[in-house]
Length: 354
Ligand code: FES
Ligand code: FES
Image 1 (cartoon, protein in one colour):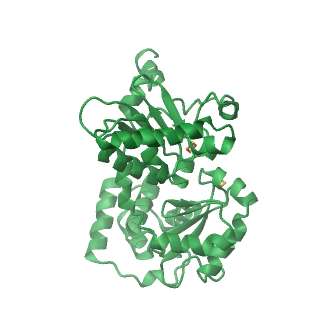
Image 2 (image 1 turned 30 degrees about the vertical axis):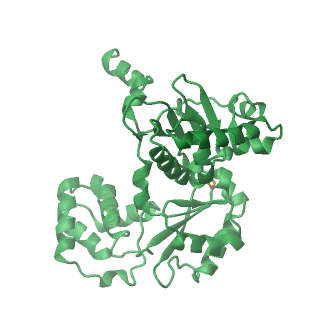
Image 3 (image 1 turned 60 degrees about the vertical axis):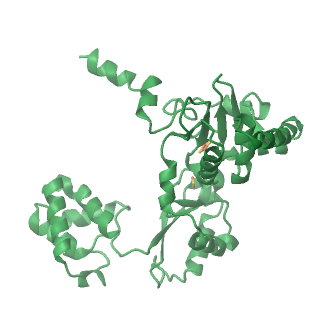
Protein backbone atom coordinates (compact mmCIF):
# COMPACT_ATOMS: atom_id res chain seq x y z
CA UNK A 1 0.00 0.00 0.00
CA UNK A 2 1.38 3.41 -0.86
CA UNK A 3 0.68 5.10 2.39
CA UNK A 4 1.32 8.72 3.41
CA UNK A 5 4.37 9.30 5.59
CA UNK A 6 5.23 5.66 6.01
CA UNK A 7 8.84 6.05 7.10
CA UNK A 8 8.62 4.52 10.55
CA UNK A 9 5.18 3.08 10.50
CA UNK A 10 5.61 -0.04 8.43
CA UNK A 11 8.13 -1.49 10.88
CA UNK A 12 5.36 -2.29 13.33
CA UNK A 13 4.51 -5.98 13.48
CA UNK A 14 1.06 -7.25 14.25
CA UNK A 15 0.64 -9.11 17.51
CA UNK A 16 -2.06 -11.67 18.22
CA UNK A 17 -3.89 -8.95 20.14
CA UNK A 18 -3.79 -6.66 17.12
CA UNK A 19 -5.18 -9.35 14.86
CA UNK A 20 -7.89 -10.24 17.35
CA UNK A 21 -8.82 -6.54 17.64
CA UNK A 22 -9.04 -5.94 13.88
CA UNK A 23 -11.01 -9.11 13.23
CA UNK A 24 -13.45 -8.20 15.98
CA UNK A 25 -14.11 -4.62 14.85
CA UNK A 26 -14.57 -5.75 11.26
CA UNK A 27 -17.03 -8.37 12.46
CA UNK A 28 -18.93 -5.75 14.46
CA UNK A 29 -18.82 -2.87 11.97
CA UNK A 30 -18.96 -4.56 8.58
CA UNK A 31 -16.84 -5.41 5.56
CA UNK A 32 -18.21 -3.06 2.90
CA UNK A 33 -16.83 0.28 1.77
CA UNK A 34 -19.48 2.08 3.86
CA UNK A 35 -17.60 0.83 6.93
CA UNK A 36 -14.35 2.61 6.15
CA UNK A 37 -14.89 5.60 8.46
CA UNK A 38 -16.10 3.69 11.55
CA UNK A 39 -13.31 1.15 11.14
CA UNK A 40 -10.69 3.88 10.88
CA UNK A 41 -12.20 5.62 13.90
CA UNK A 42 -12.06 2.41 15.93
CA UNK A 43 -8.44 1.86 14.93
CA UNK A 44 -7.49 5.40 15.82
CA UNK A 45 -9.31 5.18 19.14
CA UNK A 46 -7.08 2.27 20.07
CA UNK A 47 -3.73 3.24 18.57
CA UNK A 48 -4.20 7.04 18.49
CA UNK A 49 -3.16 6.95 14.82
CA UNK A 50 -3.55 4.60 11.84
CA UNK A 51 -0.65 2.11 11.71
CA UNK A 52 -0.09 0.80 8.19
CA UNK A 53 0.12 -2.95 9.05
CA UNK A 54 -3.28 -2.66 10.74
CA UNK A 55 -4.73 -1.04 7.62
CA UNK A 56 -3.25 -3.77 5.45
CA UNK A 57 -4.98 -6.37 7.59
CA UNK A 58 -8.26 -4.49 7.18
CA UNK A 59 -7.87 -4.68 3.39
CA UNK A 60 -7.08 -8.40 3.57
CA UNK A 61 -10.24 -9.34 5.43
CA UNK A 62 -12.77 -6.87 3.98
CA UNK A 63 -13.94 -5.58 0.60
CA UNK A 64 -12.27 -2.26 1.39
CA UNK A 65 -9.42 -1.34 -0.96
CA UNK A 66 -6.17 0.47 -0.07
CA UNK A 67 -7.18 3.41 -2.25
CA UNK A 68 -10.47 3.78 -0.37
CA UNK A 69 -8.60 3.84 2.94
CA UNK A 70 -6.05 6.34 1.67
CA UNK A 71 -8.78 8.52 0.14
CA UNK A 72 -10.81 8.71 3.33
CA UNK A 73 -7.97 8.89 5.82
CA UNK A 74 -6.23 11.73 4.00
CA UNK A 75 -9.46 13.65 3.35
CA UNK A 76 -10.58 13.90 6.98
CA UNK A 77 -8.19 15.77 9.23
CA UNK A 78 -9.33 13.75 12.25
CA UNK A 79 -7.23 10.82 11.02
CA UNK A 80 -3.56 10.73 11.84
CA UNK A 81 -0.88 8.80 9.97
CA UNK A 82 1.93 9.19 12.44
CA UNK A 83 2.29 8.22 16.09
CA UNK A 84 1.26 11.03 18.38
CA UNK A 85 2.68 12.40 21.59
CA UNK A 86 1.15 11.63 24.95
CA UNK A 87 -0.69 14.96 24.96
CA UNK A 88 -2.32 16.82 22.08
CA UNK A 89 -2.06 20.60 21.86
CA UNK A 90 -4.88 21.99 19.74
CA UNK A 91 -4.05 25.52 18.63
CA UNK A 92 -7.18 27.30 17.51
CA UNK A 93 -6.88 29.03 14.17
CA UNK A 94 -10.53 30.07 13.93
CA UNK A 95 -11.29 33.61 12.85
CA UNK A 96 -11.24 35.22 16.30
CA UNK A 97 -8.05 33.45 17.32
CA UNK A 98 -6.41 34.21 13.99
CA UNK A 99 -7.15 37.90 14.40
CA UNK A 100 -5.77 37.77 17.94
CA UNK A 101 -2.46 36.20 16.88
CA UNK A 102 -2.86 32.41 16.74
CA UNK A 103 0.00 32.15 14.23
CA UNK A 104 2.49 33.62 16.68
CA UNK A 105 1.11 31.35 19.42
CA UNK A 106 1.64 28.31 17.22
CA UNK A 107 5.20 29.48 16.43
CA UNK A 108 5.91 29.96 20.12
CA UNK A 109 4.78 26.41 20.93
CA UNK A 110 6.91 25.03 18.08
CA UNK A 111 9.95 26.92 19.34
CA UNK A 112 9.37 25.81 22.90
CA UNK A 113 8.96 22.17 21.89
CA UNK A 114 11.90 22.32 19.47
CA UNK A 115 9.80 21.24 16.51
CA UNK A 116 11.37 21.64 13.10
CA UNK A 117 9.32 22.32 9.99
CA UNK A 118 6.67 19.69 9.20
CA UNK A 119 7.29 17.90 12.50
CA UNK A 120 4.40 18.03 14.93
CA UNK A 121 5.63 15.88 17.81
CA UNK A 122 8.45 16.74 20.18
CA UNK A 123 11.52 14.47 20.33
CA UNK A 124 10.43 13.04 23.71
CA UNK A 125 7.01 12.09 22.35
CA UNK A 126 5.23 14.12 25.03
CA UNK A 127 3.36 16.73 22.97
CA UNK A 128 1.87 16.76 19.50
CA UNK A 129 0.69 20.08 18.16
CA UNK A 130 -2.07 20.54 15.64
CA UNK A 131 -4.16 23.33 14.15
CA UNK A 132 -7.88 23.23 14.74
CA UNK A 133 -10.88 25.36 13.81
CA UNK A 134 -12.90 27.31 16.38
CA UNK A 135 -12.89 25.70 19.81
CA UNK A 136 -16.09 27.47 20.75
CA UNK A 137 -14.67 29.89 23.30
CA UNK A 138 -13.80 32.87 21.12
CA UNK A 139 -14.15 35.30 24.03
CA UNK A 140 -10.86 33.87 25.29
CA UNK A 141 -8.98 34.18 21.97
CA UNK A 142 -6.30 33.26 21.23
CA UNK A 143 -6.97 29.85 22.69
CA UNK A 144 -5.25 26.47 22.89
CA UNK A 145 -6.55 23.27 24.35
CA UNK A 146 -4.27 20.60 25.77
CA UNK A 147 -6.08 17.30 26.34
CA UNK A 148 -9.31 19.15 26.91
CA UNK A 149 -7.88 21.79 29.26
CA UNK A 150 -8.30 25.23 27.72
CA UNK A 151 -5.86 28.11 28.02
CA UNK A 152 -7.05 31.50 26.82
CA UNK A 153 -5.82 35.07 26.23
CA UNK A 154 -2.39 33.70 25.33
CA UNK A 155 0.65 35.59 24.20
CA UNK A 156 3.88 34.04 22.90
CA UNK A 157 5.47 34.89 26.26
CA UNK A 158 2.92 32.86 28.21
CA UNK A 159 3.48 29.66 26.21
CA UNK A 160 6.26 28.22 28.46
CA UNK A 161 4.04 28.88 31.50
CA UNK A 162 1.15 27.08 29.82
CA UNK A 163 3.25 23.97 29.25
CA UNK A 164 4.60 24.09 32.82
CA UNK A 165 1.14 24.57 34.20
CA UNK A 166 -0.22 21.68 32.21
CA UNK A 167 2.58 19.31 33.21
CA UNK A 168 2.51 20.26 36.86
CA UNK A 169 -1.24 20.56 37.13
CA UNK A 170 -2.88 18.28 39.61
CA UNK A 171 -5.90 18.37 37.34
CA UNK A 172 -6.70 14.85 36.28
CA UNK A 173 -9.17 13.70 33.73
CA UNK A 174 -10.62 11.37 36.33
CA UNK A 175 -11.84 14.64 37.78
CA UNK A 176 -14.30 14.55 34.88
CA UNK A 177 -16.59 12.25 36.79
CA UNK A 178 -17.47 15.25 38.91
CA UNK A 179 -18.86 16.94 35.83
CA UNK A 180 -21.69 14.47 35.59
CA UNK A 181 -25.26 15.61 35.57
CA UNK A 182 -27.32 16.85 38.48
CA UNK A 183 -25.99 15.86 41.81
CA UNK A 184 -28.03 16.08 44.98
CA UNK A 185 -25.57 16.30 47.76
CA UNK A 186 -27.49 15.27 50.86
CA UNK A 187 -30.65 13.33 51.24
CA UNK A 188 -34.03 14.89 51.90
CA UNK A 189 -36.13 17.53 50.27
CA UNK A 190 -34.13 19.81 48.01
CA UNK A 191 -33.78 23.33 49.30
CA UNK A 192 -32.63 24.83 46.05
CA UNK A 193 -30.63 24.40 42.93
CA UNK A 194 -27.16 25.64 42.11
CA UNK A 195 -26.67 25.91 38.37
CA UNK A 196 -23.24 26.08 36.94
CA UNK A 197 -22.51 27.02 33.34
CA UNK A 198 -20.32 24.35 31.82
CA UNK A 199 -20.28 25.55 28.24
CA UNK A 200 -16.91 25.82 26.50
CA UNK A 201 -16.15 29.38 27.68
CA UNK A 202 -17.18 28.55 31.22
CA UNK A 203 -14.98 25.46 31.31
CA UNK A 204 -12.11 27.39 29.78
CA UNK A 205 -12.41 29.98 32.53
CA UNK A 206 -12.33 27.34 35.27
CA UNK A 207 -15.94 26.47 36.01
CA UNK A 208 -15.03 22.84 36.62
CA UNK A 209 -12.82 23.98 39.50
CA UNK A 210 -15.69 26.12 40.76
CA UNK A 211 -17.89 23.04 40.61
CA UNK A 212 -15.41 21.04 42.67
CA UNK A 213 -15.50 23.76 45.33
CA UNK A 214 -19.30 23.84 45.20
CA UNK A 215 -19.47 20.11 45.80
CA UNK A 216 -17.00 20.36 48.68
CA UNK A 217 -18.81 23.28 50.27
CA UNK A 218 -22.26 21.76 49.98
CA UNK A 219 -21.03 18.45 51.34
CA UNK A 220 -19.19 20.12 54.21
CA UNK A 221 -22.28 22.02 55.34
CA UNK A 222 -24.71 19.20 54.57
CA UNK A 223 -26.79 21.49 52.45
CA UNK A 224 -29.67 19.98 50.52
CA UNK A 225 -29.05 21.54 47.16
CA UNK A 226 -28.88 20.10 43.73
CA UNK A 227 -25.78 21.08 41.80
CA UNK A 228 -26.62 21.08 38.14
CA UNK A 229 -24.58 21.68 35.03
CA UNK A 230 -26.20 23.86 32.42
CA UNK A 231 -25.18 24.94 28.94
CA UNK A 232 -24.12 28.35 27.67
CA UNK A 233 -26.14 31.11 29.33
CA UNK A 234 -25.20 33.59 26.63
CA UNK A 235 -22.89 35.87 28.58
CA UNK A 236 -19.67 34.06 27.94
CA UNK A 237 -17.54 37.11 28.75
CA UNK A 238 -18.76 36.98 32.37
CA UNK A 239 -17.88 33.34 33.03
CA UNK A 240 -17.67 31.27 35.18
CA UNK A 241 -21.35 31.75 35.98
CA UNK A 242 -23.19 30.35 38.96
CA UNK A 243 -26.93 30.74 39.41
CA UNK A 244 -28.62 29.92 42.68
CA UNK A 245 -32.33 29.16 42.34
CA UNK A 246 -34.30 29.01 45.58
CA UNK A 247 -37.46 26.91 46.12
CA UNK A 248 -39.57 30.07 45.65
CA UNK A 249 -37.96 30.32 42.17
CA UNK A 250 -36.10 33.48 43.04
CA UNK A 251 -32.71 33.32 41.40
CA UNK A 252 -29.34 34.97 41.91
CA UNK A 253 -26.74 35.04 39.20
CA UNK A 254 -23.04 35.31 40.01
CA UNK A 255 -20.45 36.17 37.40
CA UNK A 256 -16.71 35.66 37.18
CA UNK A 257 -16.86 33.29 40.11
CA UNK A 258 -13.59 31.89 41.39
CA UNK A 259 -13.18 28.80 43.59
CA UNK A 260 -12.47 31.17 46.50
CA UNK A 261 -15.89 32.84 46.09
CA UNK A 262 -17.83 29.61 46.34
CA UNK A 263 -18.07 29.24 50.11
CA UNK A 264 -19.45 32.78 50.48
CA UNK A 265 -22.05 32.24 47.79
CA UNK A 266 -23.21 28.93 49.23
CA UNK A 267 -23.47 30.26 52.78
CA UNK A 268 -25.30 33.33 51.62
CA UNK A 269 -28.22 31.30 50.33
CA UNK A 270 -28.22 28.09 52.34
CA UNK A 271 -28.25 27.84 56.09
CA UNK A 272 -25.86 25.32 57.58
CA UNK A 273 -26.27 24.04 61.10
CA UNK A 274 -24.46 25.33 64.20
CA UNK A 275 -21.42 27.47 64.02
CA UNK A 276 -21.42 27.82 60.25
CA UNK A 277 -24.58 29.90 60.43
CA UNK A 278 -22.55 32.70 61.96
CA UNK A 279 -20.03 32.48 59.15
CA UNK A 280 -22.89 32.67 56.70
CA UNK A 281 -24.07 35.91 58.18
CA UNK A 282 -20.63 37.44 58.02
CA UNK A 283 -19.97 36.46 54.41
CA UNK A 284 -23.48 37.49 53.44
CA UNK A 285 -22.76 40.98 54.73
CA UNK A 286 -19.56 41.14 52.70
CA UNK A 287 -21.42 40.24 49.54
CA UNK A 288 -24.27 42.63 50.32
CA UNK A 289 -21.66 45.35 50.46
CA UNK A 290 -20.47 44.35 47.01
CA UNK A 291 -24.03 44.37 45.73
CA UNK A 292 -24.69 47.90 46.85
CA UNK A 293 -21.49 49.27 45.40
CA UNK A 294 -22.34 51.50 42.48
CA UNK A 295 -19.30 50.76 40.37
CA UNK A 296 -19.51 47.98 37.76
CA UNK A 297 -16.44 46.01 38.71
CA UNK A 298 -17.35 44.94 42.29
CA UNK A 299 -20.82 43.95 41.12
CA UNK A 300 -19.60 41.77 38.31
CA UNK A 301 -17.25 40.16 40.76
CA UNK A 302 -20.23 38.78 42.59
CA UNK A 303 -23.92 38.91 41.87
CA UNK A 304 -25.43 40.33 38.71
CA UNK A 305 -29.04 40.63 37.75
CA UNK A 306 -30.55 39.99 34.37
CA UNK A 307 -32.43 43.24 34.94
CA UNK A 308 -29.20 45.14 35.30
CA UNK A 309 -28.87 47.44 32.25
CA UNK A 310 -25.40 46.11 31.41
CA UNK A 311 -26.65 42.56 31.39
CA UNK A 312 -30.12 42.99 29.95
CA UNK A 313 -28.76 45.11 27.07
CA UNK A 314 -26.62 42.15 26.17
CA UNK A 315 -29.05 39.31 26.86
CA UNK A 316 -32.29 40.78 25.54
CA UNK A 317 -31.01 40.82 21.99
CA UNK A 318 -30.36 37.10 22.11
CA UNK A 319 -33.00 34.66 20.92
CA UNK A 320 -32.24 31.07 21.83
CA UNK A 321 -33.79 28.69 19.32
CA UNK A 322 -31.88 25.42 19.24
CA UNK A 323 -30.55 26.25 22.70
CA UNK A 324 -33.86 27.13 24.34
CA UNK A 325 -33.64 26.58 28.12
CA UNK A 326 -29.86 26.75 27.95
CA UNK A 327 -28.80 27.94 31.34
CA UNK A 328 -31.67 26.30 33.18
CA UNK A 329 -31.71 22.65 32.15
CA UNK A 330 -28.91 20.14 31.97
CA UNK A 331 -27.93 19.53 28.33
CA UNK A 332 -27.69 15.79 28.89
CA UNK A 333 -30.74 15.21 31.09
CA UNK A 334 -33.38 13.73 28.79
CA UNK A 335 -36.08 13.65 31.47
CA UNK A 336 -35.66 17.36 32.10
CA UNK A 337 -35.68 17.98 28.36
CA UNK A 338 -38.96 16.09 28.02
CA UNK A 339 -40.47 18.02 30.95
CA UNK A 340 -39.70 21.22 29.05
CA UNK A 341 -41.38 20.18 25.82
CA UNK A 342 -38.50 18.30 24.27
CA UNK A 343 -39.23 16.06 21.29
CA UNK A 344 -42.74 17.47 20.83
CA UNK A 345 -42.12 18.05 17.13
CA UNK A 346 -40.72 14.54 16.73
CA UNK A 347 -43.72 13.08 18.55
CA UNK A 348 -46.04 15.03 16.28
CA UNK A 349 -44.26 13.73 13.19
CA UNK A 350 -44.44 10.15 14.40
CA UNK A 351 -48.01 10.16 15.66
CA UNK A 352 -49.96 12.81 13.75
CA UNK A 353 -48.39 13.19 10.32
CA UNK A 354 -48.54 10.58 7.62
S1 FES B 1 -11.93 31.20 16.93
FE1 FES B 1 -10.71 30.32 18.46
S2 FES B 1 -12.13 29.71 19.94
FE2 FES B 1 -13.37 30.49 18.37
S1 FES C 1 -20.15 29.17 27.64
FE1 FES C 1 -20.73 29.72 29.65
S2 FES C 1 -22.03 31.44 29.33
FE2 FES C 1 -21.45 30.88 27.34
